[in-house]
Image (tube, rainbow, N blue to C red; front, side, top):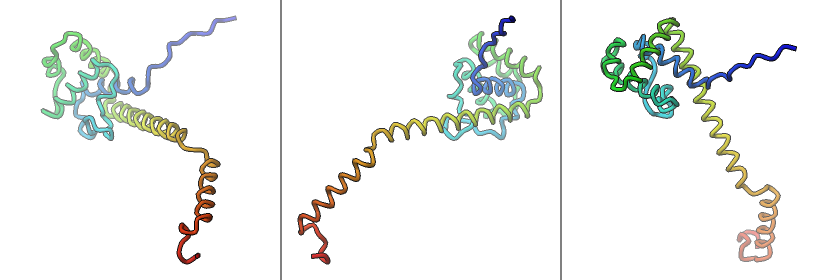
Length: 166
């Protein structure tokens, strides 16, 4: 019998999409024009969601430079890198992005995956909040019994009965 081939588990789809997005942006920052950036929850480019701190720094640098000057070259980014490892990562992203090409399509696909991952995360958080709220509610039977006791108490004490019923 042949042993099964062991494959490494796939990387987190959202983080892989952020990497693809960076590969595009360092090569073609003009594609960023249509996407909103910033830290708002509704923003598709919430850079705080990038798990790798080095990639997050590079993304903030790319977005900041794009907002300041619009189009730029990789050399402009490299001149802003104070950490040699950031510069090395930036060159790696640029090389991989250039080899891939198809910047607009890659950008759109990565952005859609990031939006979907963000939406799924929000839905999961909503489900968790609902589940925790549901456990704090009293069972329906217990509420009915309390209401029934209240109604019986009102009926026993005439001064709680509305005037039209006396």
